[in-house]
Length: 123
Image (cartoon, rainbow, N blue to C red; front, side):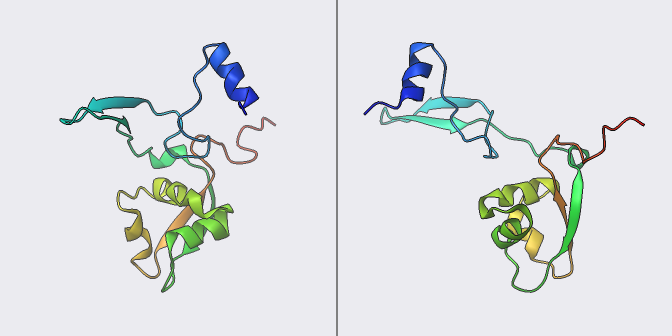
């Protein structure tokens, strides 16, 4: 059976997003390379860490012994798969390093570019 949404998108020349909207790779362009054996490989182009000022802090979490980034994301963001948001908000090139130091303070933030509640209020 054909997915009606996919059929509509194809009929109207619309490209289906490569990554889900909650993926850290959503919106990034892809490129292709041809391997020596002739196979084509699609890959995501380089992604740069966003600057910390792009994030509105909601809370702070203190790392305790045995913490894992996926568990912290599940606890504070509601989904273990969102652990990349903790890495981005805390400027981590190596996400596992965020939980290596007991006592470290981690910023728990809204997604990049989402303002804090009330940030745009004019009084």
